[in-house]
Structure formats: structure tokens, C-alpha cells
Length: 358
Ligand SMILES: [Zn+2]
Ligand SMILES: [Zn+2]
Image (tube, rainbow, N blue to C red; front, side, top):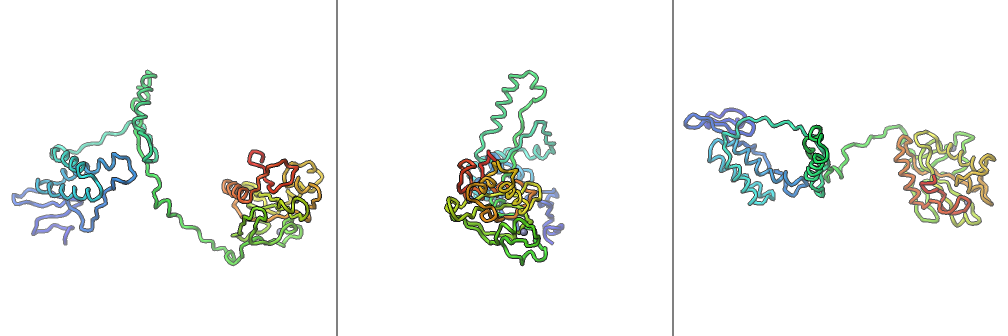
């Protein structure tokens, strides 16, 4: 069998990256062994790496050959092959030749001596690599010199500048592919339920059932922007909703006043429960002087809460994810242009106070 056992005819055996054989004079000789299926995949010089990486590759490969090759002829043959392979990967021939010559000048017996790499005592400064980064090492060296000049004790507690190392940043493959497979939802009936908002109809006293209509989408008559509901939403869910003034006379019939709201962060207060709060500010005596925009709006002249106020839940969002909740809220405020610009006493399309006022 080739490769795995001693061949009595050639008096050779392949082991790791070596072919070891016994020559005519009875000496052991070694040369490079490569699997037949090997492909040339040296790092491309154009790859996003610090410059010294691809600069060092020709020399370190040649260095390895000097260690491996026990005969002059074997070394020259394999250095020649290496040169062509590196040039085929886009390395400049002149710099490859220079690296190979540098390796040729080494003494094989000297570099075969086993050495212990020195342990790094310096603090490590690790950052993601970017080709646009300035010379970090030089900057640190300079600052370190300044530190030594300013503080006599610095030589004790910070004797040498930090060692700069880089981590790989996301490449195209990481950006395009998602390694995590989405969880398959297998709750019975979940797939068959249609998308849209549906009144629960279960509780006789459900506020939302009284102040809503079933809908599968919503289009703002003023901005023309629309949202299609992609979940099955009902009164007891939590997430994002719209409050609309449906008054069909006066300014509101032209302004289509709209408010984008969210149910409480981190708590499970449902759409219907939240609506109860809005209706309260608009109707209860104790909220007469409210500065809440929704309450104020439906207290303004000519309004009847029962007739004019409508809520439409548009998206279910897990309350454990306040960042997503806020991001979606802002998204819809932008989309439907519901930021309030005038004072709370004036009627206008938007009913969301800007971020500072909320
Ligand atoms: Zn309901
Ligand atoms: Zn109104």
C-alpha cells in the first residue's frame, strides 16, 4: 500500500509531511511529502490581512523546506516548485526569490536544533483587523516612550509596550449566511390561523373589542403608507398598536390623527389593557387636565370617544425584548409620520411626542 507502510523496493515510507528513505550508502534521507489530492491554497497577498503576514509566508515556507530536505537536489527541486506556486497565487516573483535566497543561506544543522519560543510577558492589545487602521504598534511604542519619560516608576509597572494582535472580522460568507437555523413553530393550529387583527369576542367587558374592527392591513390615508399584518393578533397580545381618530367632520377628517403606541416594556400588559388606560385619560374626571396626547385629543371639541377612537394592534412583540420594541415603535412613527409638532392642545396628524418629551 502506497503512503502508509514501508515500501521494500524503494526503501521509503511516507510519514506526516516527509518521505523518509534509506539511500545507497545506508543513510536515512528525507524529502517533502504531499498528498496527491493537495491543492495550492496559500493565502492570497490580496487578502485582508496585516501586510507582514503575506510578506512572511514565502520565507517561512522556504525555511520549512530547508529543514525537511536532506539533499541539495531535493531542496532545489522543491524550492523551484514553491516559487512557481507562490507566483501562481499572485506573489511578486522578485520578493519570492529574495525570500528563497535568504532561506538558502541558512545552515540546516543550525535550524534543526529544537528551540523553545520565548514566553510573551507583554500585555496583549487585541483588536479587529481593518486595512484602514493606522500603525497601531508605532503609536503604542511612541506613547510608551512618552510614559517612560514622564514617570520614573513606569519602567517597573509597564516595562514594554503592549503587543498588538488582530482578530478576524466578519467576511462576506459570515455576513450572507446565518449559521443558526430558525426554530420550527409546531404549536397546533398556529399555521392555520389567518394573519390580521381579530377581536377576541371572549370577554363581555373587553375594551378593545368595543373600540376596534378586524383588519388584515392598514393604510394611512394621509401618507399613503401601509402595513400588512403578518401575525394573528388579538386583544390579549402585546406589542405595537395604532390609535386612530375616526371623527369624520372638522379638522380630524382631513388630518387622520394617528398615534403609535407600545404595550409596557418587560411587562405583559395586553393591548386591551393598554387601551383601557387611553380611554381612561380621555374620559375619567380625574384625568381632566391630562397632558397625554391621546387623552387630550379625544377631549378636544366635538369628540366622542366611543364614536371616534379606534385602536388597531399591528405587531406582536415579545416584551422581554425592549430594544426591539423601541426600534419597531420608532420605525412606525417614522413610517406614518406621527411625531407631534404642535402643542398637545392642537389637532394634527401626529400624536407621538418626540423622544425627549416622552
Ligand atoms: Zn377583545
Ligand atoms: Zn380627532
